[in-house]
Image (cartoon, rainbow, N blue to C red; front, side, top):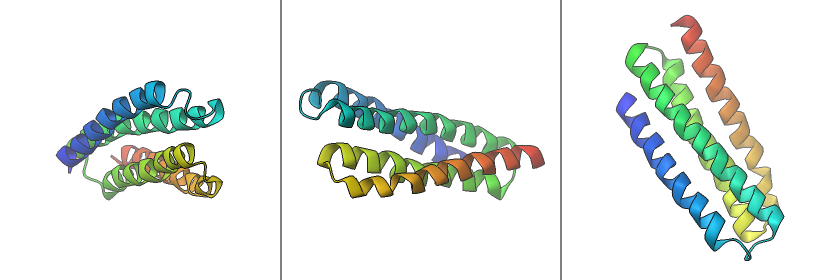
Length: 122
């Protein structure tokens, strides 16, 4: 599982760089400043959780706990829901997509709680 989380984390990091460049260059002037900020928030949280997956990978290699695996998958789900909904909102302007974002945020919170629990019990 540790390699899986490194691969996913590296992939999300790679995509974060690509999406950050896309937002900075291709979207400037095409979407308003508020939507560009929304897009950038998605990129920022994607990067945070790409790095978090590298921490999860390290933890998988050092401790045996289902909570660590849960943390990793919650970070993946959170990134898809949180960042993905912000990207979609910024690109389409469909405001109802913003309703998905908090679900991703809850996944992030649960992931951090699982990681802390695993370290506490480690």
